[in-house]
Length: 449
Image (cartoon, rainbow, N blue to C red; front, side, top):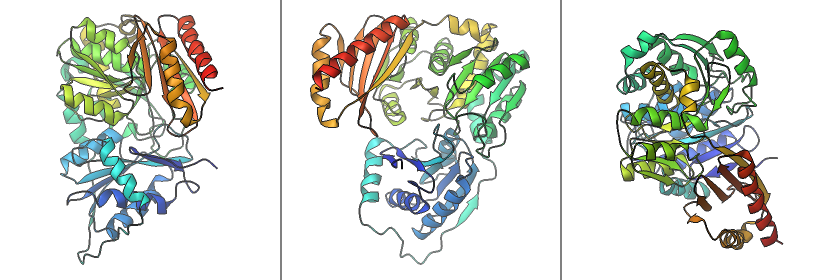
């Protein structure tokens, strides 16, 4: 049986096995007890197990004395906006992100509408693991209400960041693959508001995925064929909770997730200069774009909350992760596939170029990824050996060990859930990226014997 994946950012597990209603209820009660007064927003990403978990969580929050606003099926970034719009104490998104259909999970939002940062999440985790009883003894009866309109506030925020009239005039043909997740709830409205000609795949948010949920090239092979047949100018592919976006070009080629943030950054910096942030495992395409426009660039540790922290620290105008997660501070400090779609449509309309040409303008890099079995107690010595071996590199210990050279880098990180170490490299050619990974793997092998 797989183990429950639990961390300071939330939890995920196989429903009915590692994730039960009892576990979910205790976790959200441990979260709620640390919040100020006010209701909590509950939403879900469309998975078949979502309604039952939502009902259990609502009852658990009632028992803890908390009011609840039920947003039903809504995207993760939308949940963050609803928390702010309703002046809620926090929010809970029921989602396993890109995990397979048998999984579900929970993401926690603070009153600022962003996924809780690590210190807050650690306190929740500590309370969850304690023997505390979170049931309220208050005599007041908590209330529940239904959020009737989950999309307007989000759409209106996005509309202020793009040239709506220009996009409408372009009449862009779009294929949207929501894959039976929450993305179509706002995605279809967004594209229709922008007068796009929309081909929608998986528009019913019932969790009956047409393909594996992570929007990788291998998983989207059928969608690539559909785009060619639809003659769309661009394809947008979301994960189930719609905080990540992969792109397909007009020829049916997978542009991918790593390009999403770089393309959006390029477009935004053409009209609004400011600092840019990515995590340390994201392609250096975005760094190169930032340097091209002469703006400050910085990295964070891996994880959406860490990126948001760094964006707030430096006053970034855009940031995100290479998994297709774009964070636009004017919308919210949450990865958001919808602002990413809007920015890419705005780029096509403003420059009157196909998405393939816009992607070709970016610096080209190739990534390579490996994983090596390693006991956690060996990690310190292994990282020291790797750093010593590559004595000519620029060193960062922000998250694991990252080594940089002109035009290439390698990152070594321990897994939070498995006794392995992950190796990721990037270079201008696949051969060099693979060579870097192989050399690191060889050093780790020598240091772990």
